[in-house]
Image (tube, rainbow, N blue to C red; front, top):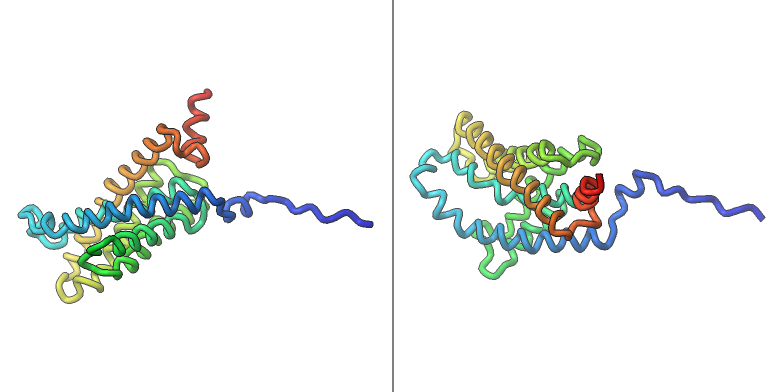
Length: 211
C-alpha cells in the first residue's frame, strides 16, 4: 500500500487561513470601534459647523476617526481581507446602535471604501510589512478613497475641482494622522497590555524584549 500524500502547510496557506481568534478579534474591534464611530457621528454635526471649518472641504479633517477600524484590523490580523472586513463590520455596528447615524445604513458603503483603501496598501506589500509608515499609508489611502466616494455621494454639484482636491487632501491627512499614527499607537498599546500575544504585534514586542 502506498503512503498517503503529505500536505504541506505553505506560507500562503497559513496567510489565508483564518483562526477562530482572528474572527473573534475582528468582531471585538468592530463592536468597540463601531460604537466609537457612532459617537463620533453624533459629534460631527456640531464640529463641522465650527468656524474653523467654514471652508466646506476642510470637513475632511474630521474623517480620520472613521478609518481606525480598517487600519487596526489590518495591523493586528495581518491576513487578506482583515482590514476590509473589520471596517465594514464596525460601520455596520455604528448603523445598528440604537438611534443609528444620520446616514443610516449607507455607512456600509463608506465602510467598504474606507476598508478597501487600507486593504490595498497591505495587499500591495504582500501582507509582509506592518510598521508605522505602512499604517500611515493605510490611513491616507482609506481617507483618499472615501473622499472620492463622497464627491459623488454627498458633494456632487457642490464641490468644484479645487474643492474636491482639497477635500481629498484634508481627508487623506486626517487618515494618515488619526487612523494611521493613532491606529498604530493603539495597536502598540494593546500589545504592551498583553492582549495581542497571539498576533504579530504582540510577538514582535516579546521578541524585542528578549534581545
